[in-house]
Image (tube, rainbow, N blue to C red; front, side, top):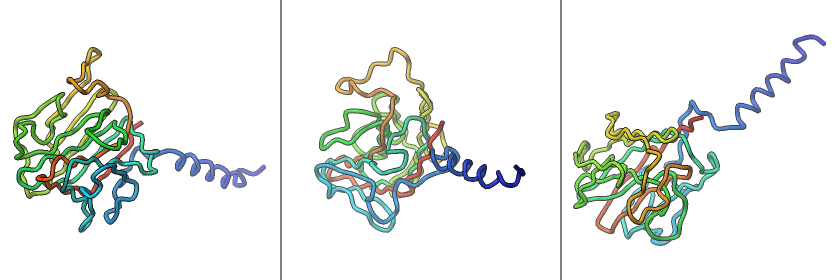
Amino acid sequence: MKTWIWLPVILISVLAFRFARPASSEWVPLFDGYSLKGWSVGENAGTFSVKDGQIVVHGPTAHLFYEGDYNNHVFKNFELKVDVMTYPGANSGIYFHTKFQESGWPKTGFEVQVNNSHTDWKRTGSLYDVVNIKEVYVKDMEWFTEYVKVDGKHVIIKLNDKVVVDYTEPKDFQPAPGQTDHFLSTGTFALQGHDPNSEVHFKNILVKVLD
C-alpha cells in the first residue's frame, strides 16, 4: 500500500492521543469570567459572586471549590496562577489538593495564604502553618499574581514572580494540630471566604497540568 494512504490514519491517531489527555504545555482557565460554572460552594453561597470578570469574595465564612470537567478536577502536579486584589483588613486563601465539603474549614489539602493587613500575622504567600511568612510583599487595593507549583513533594510559591516559599515535604512530616489530613497528595482547588469583614477579588485563574 502506498505511504500516502496511511497519512490520514496517522494524523487521526496523533490527534486522538493529543486530546485524550491534558496538555502539560498550556495554561487552562478554570474561571470563565462571567459565572461560577464548574465551581461549587456549600453553606453561605452568597459569599461568592461574579462582577466585571472577577470572583468577588465578601461575606460569612465559606469555601468555593473547583469541580469542573478539566482533568476531572483532580490535580497532583501542576502550576497555578491567580490574579488577586485584597481590600484593607482582608483575609482569604487559595487551597490545593483539597476536596469539596459542605461547611467548615477544608480538612484536606493546603492553604496558600492571602492576607496583607488582617490581624493574623501569617501573610500573603504563606503555605499556611507549614511555611509562614511575616513579611508583606504585596499591597492592598493593587492586583498581584499568586503562583503555586507542586511537583511531587516540592512546592514553590511566588508573588509577582518573586519566590517566597521553596518547600519540600519531608518523609517525617507531621501536620499542624487539627490538620491530620494535610499531606501533599491530589485534589482540587478552592477559594476561601474568611469572614464578613474581608473582601477579596480573584480573576485569571489558570492551571497547567504537569506530567
